[in-house]
Length: 120
Image 1 (cartoon, rainbow, N blue to C red):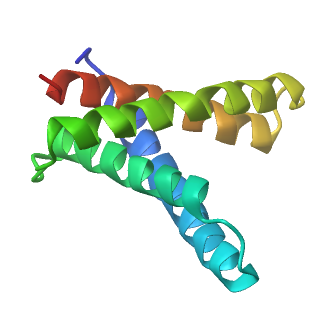
Image 2 (image 1 turned 180 degrees about the vertical axis):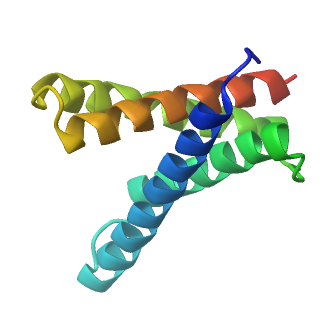
Image 3 (image 1 turned 30 degrees about the vertical axis):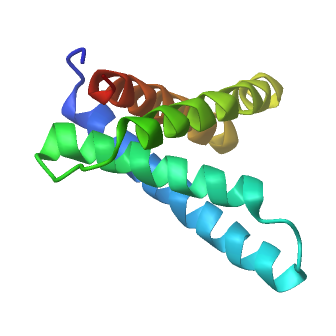
């Protein structure tokens, strides 16, 4: 993995933790509404695995997943990127929403890269 500054590491982990928390709330909400939880659950698991992969590489934390789970997570994370890029394009320059989504995009790309490095 390319050298990443400590600031980017910290912001990326915080961003993925925030995304994970938002997806956890969305998952609970979809269950309460009786809606289909498949997409939210896939994204929730993929973000969790991506976050654990980054923490594993950067902080030396444990990471034990099969290649199949790693590849599936990577695909799900890659599928999220186009919608974030659209949100960035729509957001006003300098807005908190644009900054949030730029950080989220960076974090997702780093998570994908870390998963790439783990897959055989």
